[in-house]
Length: 505
Image (cartoon, rainbow, N blue to C red; front, side, top):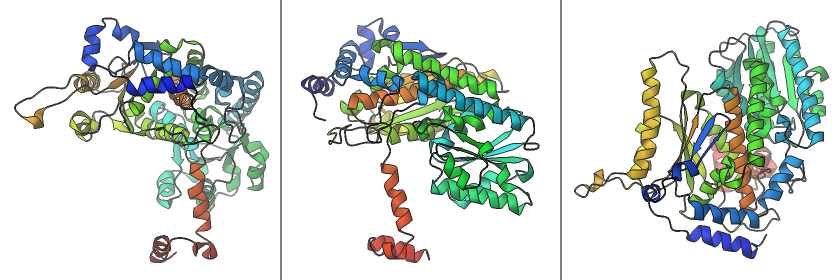
């Protein structure tokens, strides 16, 4: 897809833009903080400590016009084909009631079926249930793990364990301490052919049978867009929860994949997550671009990649309950936008997704912040913090946590000059964004996740790439299957063959 003259002009303006230091931007514009802050769904987004400004935002809005961003956004919510390489729509917004009418209706019907099965489980149709072993991989495991770890630490409902890795150590850890008689197995696979997931399902069945559970398969709930394959695997139709094949794995927690979230947190909490996400959907669809949180975030992201050459973006959650946020975002962003061709298969010709990394504050301050403050790599930093604490410790601890988060952003921006000792010089002018939640509950977590989804979609739309396919994931899987065939193995390189021989495979 060759850039139009309008798109070329917009990219040129973005790439050549020269900004003063961030603190000079504050001095020149008393209204900067208000202009570069957005409040929505119980969250405040602050981009004032970045190099964004009115001229740059106007240039990126010009790029949005040239790339027909509003048409692509409208197509997402209208259930149109936005995944052209696979000829599919992307209907995760319909799971929140924000898509096309027929998609909303299908999602609601599937959710009613999920609710009926949950009611049966809670009525002990499966006997007493104390734990759920959730088997999936990628988004089908990361989503439930993030939600329950963030919101369910004090829950008195069922315990949730997730397993994704095919490594047997992961399965050993997942079932350790669980009672097979009171554990349900939720198996999530969109195609119900995923090797890692089906291997772990077999391991879970062996665990149940080894413990003397008579009807081990009767404890399996299958969540899939391919119910026939689940039936072939021996799962009864009454225990199969379908979802639309237009819901991608990394967007799937809103679908029947969320059955484990609802069991662990309760139906009301799950519904609140959906409503929080729907609130962000409405904001993304209706808010003007300059006041649109996902769009402004994407504008900042694109500027640092294409103007400053930042090949990485760091996210630090200053709340232990969000310790799984970074792994979740790594898949969402890098699997979606780690592309090098345009929608029509032409070379992209410019960088796409940066590397996403990060951690939890204040641990990270004593590990990686040396590089952030004084290293030769300059990249945008994102702080995610929560005003209200719900822990049982002295409130002074949470106060110190928040003060540390805010101080880091200020220090990155201003730096500290030291002409006598270069080792103690901090250059400053290092950008950061702060996302401040009023409290961490089901509504705000749902809205936060939806914000990141729409931000990722916006970046893809402005780049002209497809965020909804993931063919790069398939190559390694294909070769892993081929490598187990001795005849096919002969075609592999000498290093790979030697490693197989050394491992005794």
